[in-house]
Structures are given as structure tokens and as C-alpha cells.
Amino acid sequence: MKVAARVIGVGLYHFVIAVVESKKAQSRRVKHWGITLAILAGLSASLAVADDFKTTDGKEYKNAKVSRVEPDGIVLRTKSGISKLYFTELPKEVQARFHYDAAKGNAYFVE
Image (cartoon, rainbow, N blue to C red; front, side, top):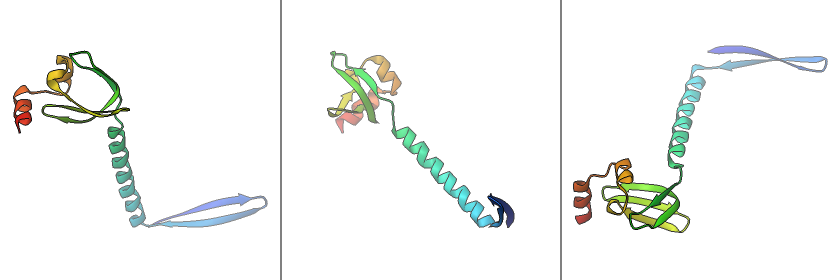
């Protein structure tokens, strides 16, 4: 148990307030801090930076956010809706960025 005193001065009057804090309260605060930190980490991860994507045939997707990565492609969210781009339609740099494996992608596409 932790005991502390605070002195509050208002004009000519001074008040002393005793503050008692138990270990339970401290542990609860630490638990809540951990939960808060986990939630903030999750939210910051979900707030992905928007990218521009261009397919090999020239179609462009501006300010697109990657919703999920699948073995055969990526799912994008844009202002106009949700689109799936297959890795075979994307440049080699984009394929490498999302760790595309042709064998796994073909097997997933066949399913």
C-alpha cells in the first residue's frame, strides 16, 4: 500500500488530501496500459499507407490500400471499391515486395 499526501492551496486556505493506493490498483493500471498499447498497435497497423499500383497492361490504382495478401494476388481498397489484382498482372518488383511464390499461387488459384 502506498500513502501520499497532496497539499492544495486555494487563496488563504490549504487542504491536505491523503491518497492511498494499493498494489491492486497499480497492477490494474499496468494491465490497462498494456491493453491500450496493444489496441494502438493494432490500429496503427490497420491504418496502412495508401500506395499507387500499376498493372503490366497499364491500368492504375491510385491511393489504394492493401486489404489482404493472398497466395495468388492482393486485394486493394480504393475510393471506387474493392479489387483483386493477381500477381501475374503486376510487375516483378511488386511481386517481390509481397513475397509471391508462383507454385503456391497456381495451387491456390486452382482450388
